[in-house]
Image 1 (cartoon, rainbow, N blue to C red):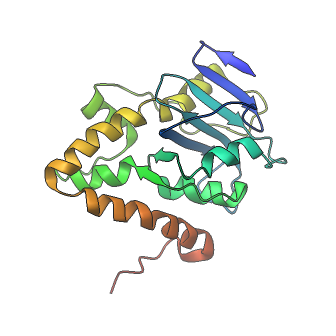
Image 2: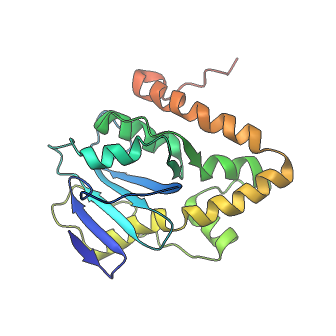
Length: 208
């Protein structure tokens, strides 16, 4: 295990034995591109919302990761994503895990922040939390054997604030009476991501 700035813990191919989480855990992934069937999973980032981030770096050959899979598949843990549709597909493709139950800040934002069309993580953090995220490493070689501090800090930032965003967005969902609608959408994301992997990624099945 390598620790950066006492908050970012880098692990190779799996989480260490004995690491456990309760309640809800923020999850994100980094890949070599946006097509799960082509672009391999490189990183899985997790945070319990306590300012610490665990980053699992996959070598592209070994996706066994029993400890990581146990966490992602734990039905007692709510997995918080931003744009869950993509991360769920990648996790299913490479780790063969259905990461449920889940909560998606992007879906919640679209159901509550109807006054804007800006629902990116950077936009949410700036408006709701007063936090400015750097996206300088968004296009980056996540398959590199050695990751830079800038890459690690970027990857960590994608999960560090999801618990706080969830809390803010839950308040907004309740205020607008849209929490049941959001929860139904969260349930459907697993199906939507499975359809993406099956070839319906560019089709709106509800369109005329």
